[in-house]
Length: 186
Ligand code: IMP
Ligand code: MG
Image (cartoon, rainbow, N blue to C red; front, side, top):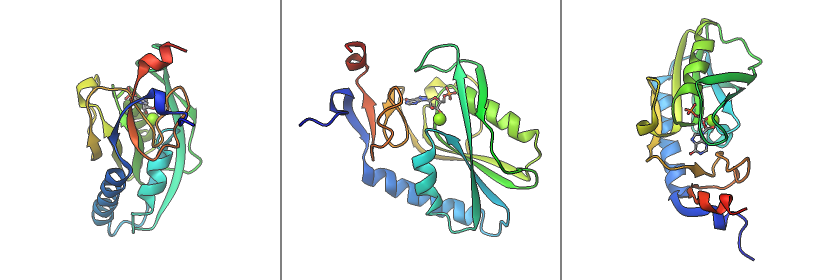
């Protein structure tokens, strides 16, 4: 039986081994950078960041708390961001005085993270840094400083490892390039 995702997959862009190796490196770097930090919070942006958060967190040797926030942009349709972003679910913990590291799946236009950063900054964290697994630099429309990047990728729609194709296939252990024609055919 063919696997359900196969017809949507043009190619595997980053396989499981490469993902896990890079995430271990990021975890080691973050562990060094925050070595003496007593108030580290990993803030995962749902839903796409959830696989990355759970693997990354296990490589961070500094004691930390985790929390979640859901943000979405609306206006341009499912595969393109607009300038309008809203918080669908706020985090439960107080960020004031905490060293917050935002964990995100992918930065495309940058609108989502720019809005999240502005929202968090108003709440007076001790520090605020960003960690994104994937970065599509060529798509950037707002300038944001990303402190940790897993992989720079080209302007292609990708899915798997937390990223969805119309909400499906977040569970794949690799990142693949989508064959969007297969969706149009449905
Ligand atoms: P931005 O606001 O344009 O930076 O968009 C960021 C959000 O759009 C990400 O958090 C993802 O949820 C989603 N996104 C952007 N590009 C892709 C992609 O190639 N695959 C899946 N989701 C994407
Ligand atoms: Mg996301």
